[in-house]
Image (cartoon, rainbow, N blue to C red; front, side, top):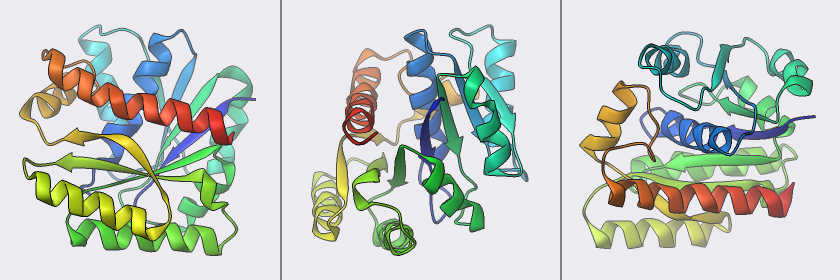
Length: 212
């Protein structure tokens, strides 16, 4: 059965799909057979990204498929080493289904209170509905240039009691342009940006090994 990592959010614009692609591409680069389960039927963000990846002949290849139900995606588990759920751009009834199926649930968030408050609220809701808090990790994403704001955001997450992943994804034009080409956040043309994204990736890998 496949390892399952769920990437979900309470609201859009927090880097959820960027994190999901980061995980999928890097596991695939290590010869895992990976599928992204795109649960965003209205926009198909991951599906469109993968079309660009295929058109530009970027390797490693990552399978992406849209699903209506979590159970349908899990049926593919025998054919893949890893399934990454890219949840809808807001919390839905399927968000809990993803969390229940996942070995690790990653909640990306920016560091403004507009992002942090609904993210922690979602974490509380998942915990209230039976998800072990140790399976829930918060990833800081779309970070700007303010060290003070970043520090405050980190303190906010730590005060909530949920696990804060090491590393962050910075808001960089290079990351957006890479995505436009079908690449992930460690496949930009800038070594420093790639290395910073890799810190978050390694934190996710380490955490899933600890809690699975």
